[in-house]
Image 1 (cartoon, rainbow, N blue to C red):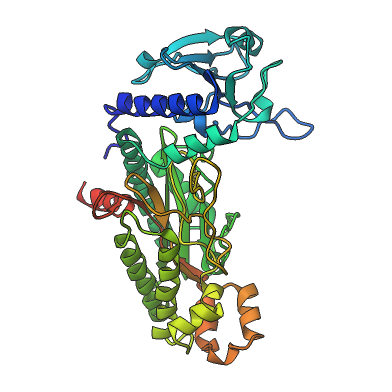
Image 2: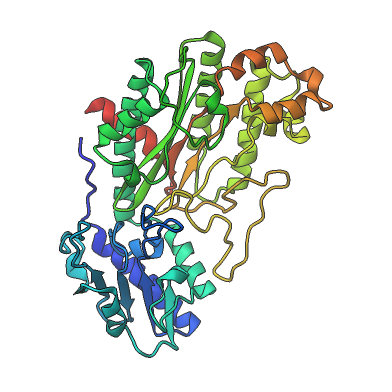
Length: 443
């Protein structure tokens, strides 16, 4: 099972990137763009670096994800230049010589010292758009991040090219394979840490290479939406596993969540019902669909599950209107996905900075756009039993409508979330995640 993407469409991708920047530069009155990869950041009062994260506007051009102190210099009509920092260093392993499918498309200049970089970039900066973090500054060269130009780049990034889709498909295949290994470790009674290590071992990667920190939550920990710990000791009973974990290929991320149970009939029924809702929502993805409406549809469908399983004795419509559904499903349905796990431009209406508002009462939704072909996004409904939110429900006007005995039983399992990555096409959606699991089963 290969995790390598087909990169033959990379020249077409690079041309799309070039055209986007050419238009944005012209509209905003700039002559060229300089893009920093970023710098290593160090812990306070220490010389230990945090894991490096490349500027996504830099790695949109080329698949360099672990290379600080590099710069792209692009002027319309000219071949883009890459200033490639390859230090002479016996303390750390320096980056290898530039190699791969992308190198022929850049004029590459290697530098050994950061101090050499400024002289290789334009001396006159008045009409340069400089993209990057503030700490990427070099002497008089400091990122200015012109907002309208950045917005234009962000909007363009929401339409994935063929090359980008190939990277995302490969990332999904890798993540699916690792999820299968994690499920096996759960069934064998592993701790959260052991399940996480099984995930990494299946891919042969280090933790720092993940696109985000894995959420590996056993039992009640599944009710913590961004559970950030990994217990080394296995619990006495393995009731449920909620694992939200990804993989990255050439900087493009998969973001997949699966939930597993121990066969308990009530939890199995809940798990199957949420999975059915998730598949229906993913299948509903189409161009020109307002994602806000899909989010509200998810609330109504999940409220239907709560009603059908006799967890809440209210109509689904009343649960949504009263906010009861948000007690059990308090987060947004999903977000854009790509070079960033929570990718950019989820609220942008246009390149003028105008935003599309979230639905009233749903402050955590990360995507309010009308979907278009080329968008890639997550669909991740869930039902959780969160003590803090349940306490408010118990003290409120609708407490008598809740089957508290059933809730108490299911709270021992934490909750259920199912998350797929979905590509919007001109017709039926492409479910990258389900396709990856099918590919794995057939391999």
